Structure formats: structure tokens, C-alpha cells
Length: 296
Image 1 (cartoon, rainbow, N blue to C red):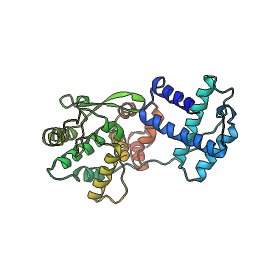
Image 2: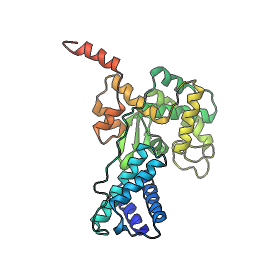
Image 3: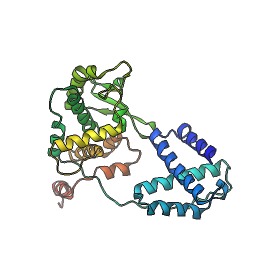
Image 4: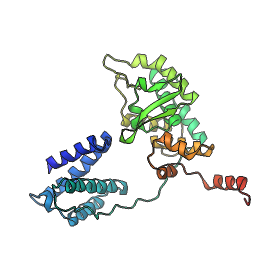
């Protein structure tokens, strides 16, 4: 089982080119399944696993409180894994072929209002190196609609302040170029001239944003920073980093940006995904309809 799992993960990395995060998530899902199988029976071969076993495992995961989104990820991992085993003739039949994917509730992340964005971006006040850094981080997250993992991976050579452009690598190792607004440009310039030189250590490398110890910032730390400044800004509702990305897309759409341009900047492979992230409220839709429709 373990050798087949390693072969599958190597396939995801080399032939499918999927991200490290996706590989880690898939490994965790499949190792959880294999561990459950070992606990269920002392010894179990891959070729003897049935569709009933897979349903039992997913039911077990649901009963222990796994969220629908996580349950869907586990189902996808099982389907990909057993399809791989079947194609490579490691097993004679695919027990996951008809495995259904759990339906997710249609909940949309709520974008921040323009006022809330202003409050959040102004929260890092002061002139110490970390405050200057944090202001640049928040400005870039909102100005470019970045995922926090993408921002963590930005290096000095990926950002061109003269051309006002940033190069990021997103899901599936796909690279895209995103324009940077003037406010974010000024914030990054201040960070590079006043803050980053004080954070650099001998082995810091070329990561754009550094921790107090000179290491590249982690997604977990960025998450903490956003929560901290949301509280500092006095925002009444819970804020998470992805809301800045959603707000970026929603505000662009509300301002008249073309949906396909937004899709390109977000790095979405599917237009359907972009449409989910760029919902506008019904009052705005009514206003647009009344303004532009002949019978509005």
C-alpha cells in the first residue's frame, strides 16, 4: 500500500504538476484511509478493497465531524488514487469509479465594504519595521487579489515597481502577471527601503516578506496578521485573508471590470469559479438593470 501511495504522489508531482499543498492534502487523506483500513482489519490488500469499504470510510469521516468541503477532498483523493491504480494495472477493477462527491452548500464569502477595507488598510499605524511590513502585506493582498500562499512565495525578482507588476505562481504551478495599484506600490517601496533591510539576516534569501527572525513569512503567520489588524481596525465581524481576495474581485466587477480579466488576475481555470467569487448584491444588479435595460 505504501509503495503504491508513493508512486501515486510522484505521479501527481511530476506528470500532473500539482502544487505541493495539494500533494500534502492528498497524502493526508489517503494515509488516513489506509490507517482506517488497517484498524478495520489486520491486513488488507489494495486489490481486495471494495466500493462498500470506501462508503464506510466516508461515513466514518462524516460521523467524526468532517466538514463537507473536507469530505469532498477526501472523496476526490480516493477516486484519483484508485483510478491511477487501475490504469497502472495494480488493481483489476476500480472500486471508486462510482463514488459520489458530497454536495457542498452554496455559501458565498462576504466581501468587505469599501469602508471596511479602508479601516483594515489603515490599521497598521506607526513607523516600526514590522508595522511598515504589515501595511505593505495588506495593501498587496487587496490590490492584487492574492492567495496568502502566493504572497508567501513572492521573491524580490517577482515584483517590478517601475512597471507596477507582480508575478505570482498559483495553483497547479501556473504563473500569472497582476498589475499593482499606486497605494500598494508606495507601501512596498516604504517596506523595501525602511523595513526589510532591518529584518534581513545572513540566510534570509530573496523572499519579499520576512519575519522578525529574517525567515520567509508562513501562511499561518499571514492569517494571524490579518485577524490582528481586523481587531485593531474595530471590525465587528470575523475577517480572514481570503475575504481580501474576494473583495478585490467583487470591487473590480462593481467598478465595471470585464469578468474574463478578473478571471485572469485571480488565476482561475474556470469562469464558473470566478462567477462565484464575484457576486454583487441584488440592489446593485437592479440599479444596473434600470440604467441600461430599455424596459428597466
